[in-house]
Length: 169
Image (cartoon, rainbow, N blue to C red; front, side, top):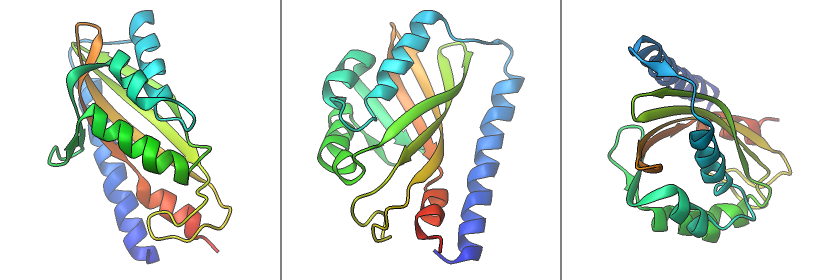
């Protein structure tokens, strides 16, 4: 990716992330997550790690009709679609993939999670040839919780940063 385009992409992602945090901070009733919610989120994010069983984990942490949508809401996946994409694709391409929860904020039935994904691709990743380099990418997820499970998710990952890290000279 050209340096200027990468900077523009990072600036756009950063602006979006800051907007989410600003809105959450202005919400009337923000609070820390309960122990039960933290356990649910920890289990759910464990499904993104290579070597996990995303289908089994997501069946325990999400509602059957869970939708996992990009930040603009236009492209959504079911839990089976996401589990398949992880198990049959991303986990094979990035066999040391991990996703860590860094921050959580609750407002009503929604929880915002700032996370961090890390990994080292063993093949071409987003058009960048494998080089042994690793990436570290930030994510922001907004989950709606119903009856103790995740009912809906909007997510945003900073893949421009990953591309920049993987293609750096």
